[in-house]
Image 1: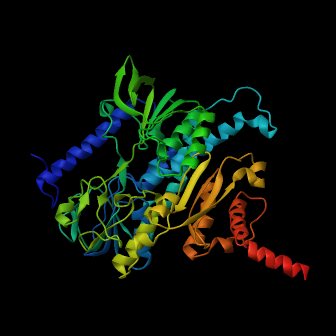
Image 2 (image 1 turned 120 degrees about the horizontal axis):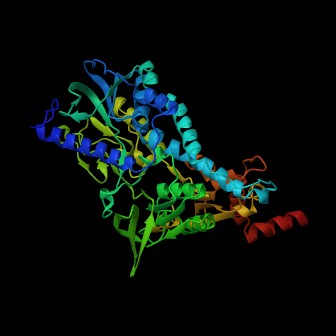
Length: 533
């Protein structure tokens, strides 16, 4: 018989026990096949910040204004914001504060991407007029140690000590809802006026035959590696797969991307994805589109993957497999039925435009409920919840203008509508495109691949959306996002003085191109008459 968990039916407790045991066992089995470092000083510092050894949960308050389940970006932002405004807040985390972003996502991935870019530039040093004697030696263990150091440093911002100083009660353990206004964590009951579910998401790996029987990599364990795989297969052509495929290829791994769809980054504009495809080819990445992994097995100590594209099939031998086929929300072990919260195991918590669930006391934010699973959308949605749940706010998710970026080289950033979306809504669109090879700073930096493309509603300067392909696209997209949020048109951007030389000058050039369209033949005739007079 299963050991009952406080306030949770035996069946639910047994289900969670099986779930947790399978997760831990699977991770241990996977890591056993790869060379991973024992916790060093950096990891010990990080763990002491985000889940201190010997931690004892506090005695709960009588009733909390807000109980937050999950301490990733959304949970941390909500807890800090609510506490700063005077609310009594409890924050529950079953694993590590900081969630995916700090521990297995944005922070570690961007740290190694930066080093991979340096290696790529070193190989091309001669075109910058530099000489590097001898072969370039890649110290992969040192790359990962640098990443761990960066992760440890940033973990100080997400530490339990900061939360305590802010007045937040921090609980470590698995949370279960036990009623419409109560939940339990490791046998301790907490009562709340409002609750926020911010439990994030995990890799979706269930759709690949043979995968669960072998060791494989996801974002959850790839940053534990200390040895570079000689041959790497990346299954999935989304942002995660593209970013890490390029980084590992630049470190020296023979890299293949297998993407089931006809194009990778399927949501992005085709010319943007094509420029990235060309960059991948230059790096030496083998991209196989319309290709599905139909079977994975181990023979002779190596992993064999059967790939099928239409009526063509091939078997590739690799040393490591990275799965980047999407993410699913962590909502299946919270006993949400007891709280009266509607959810779906694929799309997550069902919320309205105010991020409220079917239980009016309970809200959701971040990857547990959002389509756009980004750190900055988790942050923004958490702030909406604090306003709406605690202060009778009416902030709407649909009112957000959300940019995003895939941090490849070149990077691809987007905000607002794509042309196809505008046409679906019968909105007439005019597009202004500036190639990066027309921008002086891009030429000087030898970063000419890419473009700035801005869409406006026809016969107006109202910006509907934009796509930027450039090395610094993630930084550049913010100017356009600000303009859209503030209602600033493209005409006004033409009057903004941009520091010269910068790559963001491409945005001003696009605005200047818009202004030139306002010089109609009639206006030009009037100007000539005036000057003649």
